Image 1 (cartoon, rainbow, N blue to C red):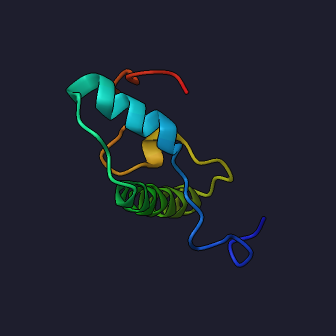
Image 2 (cartoon, rainbow, N blue to C red; image 1 turned 120 degrees about the horizontal axis):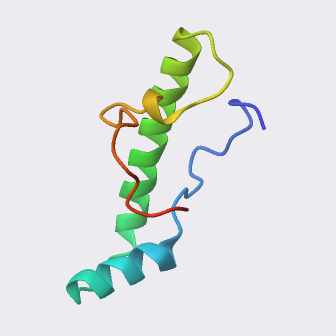
Image 3 (tube, helix red, strand yellow; image 1 turned 135 degrees about the vertical axis):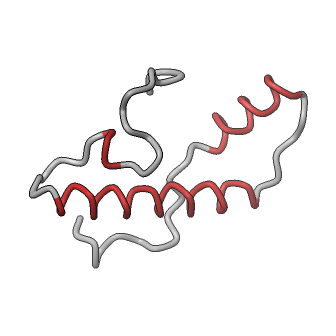
Length: 79
């Protein structure tokens, strides 16, 4: 799917996973609006990573392309 075809309002996070994580780690509930905020943050991070990969002349987005995530840290969990 090209950039022009990608839905702008598509949610990029799995709500049930986020809600379960928050509930298990804090015993708090999660508002539905949180998914919109998280999805917007993920989209922004991805857009910046795409820019960085293109600047480096690559066709693959890598962990080092994400601002603030230089790839030097171990991931908290595997997706």
